[in-house]
Length: 146
Image (cartoon, rainbow, N blue to C red; front, side):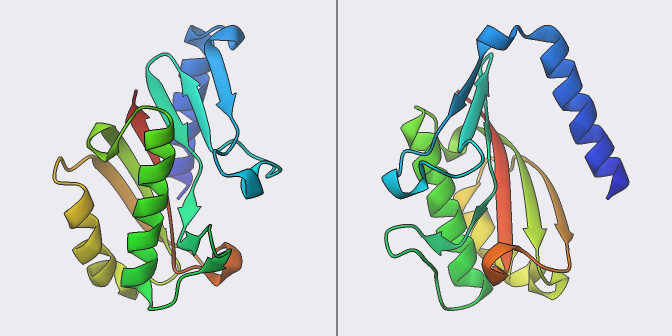
């Protein structure tokens, strides 16, 4: 976990050293009900989009989808797809995924849905944690080319 965090921090430092602050755009959510969140849905710099993590929440209904890890994984990826589309990108432009599972035993079922969305096979890191927001089973964030 420390090595992943260290690599991520190094990447952010590298980008910040090479980019003027005016070249960074912090995008609020495209959904009205998420305009006041304390984070950006996406941050754009150079030709990259860094998306905040998504959980399997149906934003129209305001609840986590039911049906377990497969249903949540599908909703997470549909949420990511919607944010990317808002910024003129798509899943086939994703270069890096970070996947966080609440239970590593869900890996096989998560992966069976994931592969349907990413035939290009972006780089990926997957790990499990003790818990996620809203009792979600999965959270994914991505980096995509614009």
